[in-house]
Length: 85
Image 1: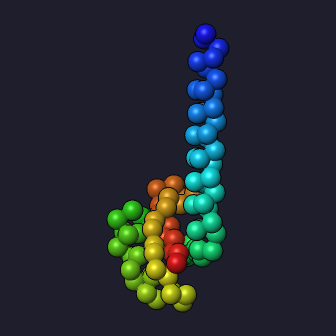
Image 2: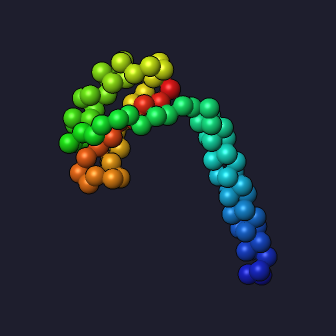
């Protein structure tokens, strides 16, 4: 009786995994055409990077609609500005 009870559970787990996989693939399609660039220069803090975002976004060619800041991988404690649309 224990074996029969575990089979439906395995099917539900497999179905949940399939739904999760399909969701991830669908999300990837929406982002496949998005352009992203990392701007030149570094900022000493996250706040400084975010404060510079609107100006850099407005003065960089490409009609960028979004910006965010990420830690600089090459210089500890500094931040880089990323633009996307």
